[in-house]
Amino acid sequence: MLRRKLPVSSVVFGALALACGVAAFALMQAWAQRVNTTRPDGGPPVRVAVLTRDLPRGITLTADMMRDTTVPEAFAPPAAVGSAHDALGRVLAADVAGGEVLTGTRLAGSSSGPIAALVPPGMRAVVVPTALPSDPVRPGDLVDVLAAFGGPQSHVETVGQDLEVARVLSPEEAAARTPGTTGTGGPSLILLADPATSEDLAFALAFATITVTVDAPPQNAASASPASTPPPVVATALVPSATP
Image 1 (cartoon, rainbow, N blue to C red):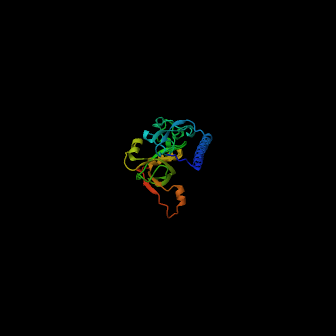
Image 2: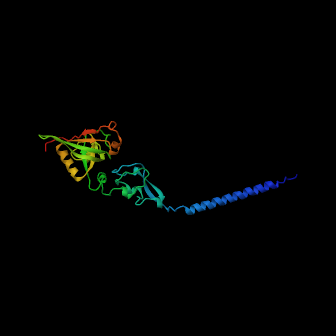
Image 3: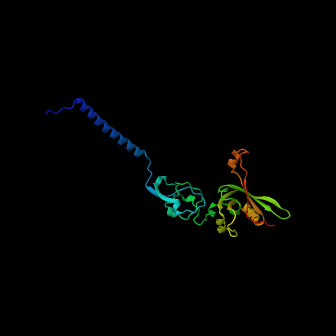
């Protein structure tokens, strides 16, 4: 039986296909090598602590709020915390986003409590009880504090204006943190105030009935028309009035 001989054209096309394959492989190898030489070196992997969810300032970090991961050394931010264990029990000094690498600049001093961590330099934190429901006021809101003084010369004074709410304490939290509170009524607001305003608030809390008003933030109020701007929320604090 005779073996059929391949046509010359088939042999030529097969050789060309093999040559093209080898050339393509060589070109890809050369391109990959050039990419590797031009790509910046990220350095060896380093371990960092990453937040598992968005967290507000003033919160005390627990194990479920962080996880350890590795990133190239060049991409680790300065002062990155190397382990979630190292940050356990520390207080956040700023808001952080989920997935963000935790850094030492985001942490309050190791001796700072959750309230002290919220207070900027030169400011004070003042606890003001209110009769507000639990939802209307959140950290970051701005409020005014009005004091109604009784007696023969009864009058109302604005003792604090555009004060930032640093934290909202539930009645139970307020009772645990603030002597003299019973844990009944509405939440207490931790307000940031300068020293002079803090003194005015302390005097008003001792000798007047306190009312807290909550309005829209300035940036929202400026863009809203007068007809669409909601009225302020008003609540009277559960502080007995007295004559100075």
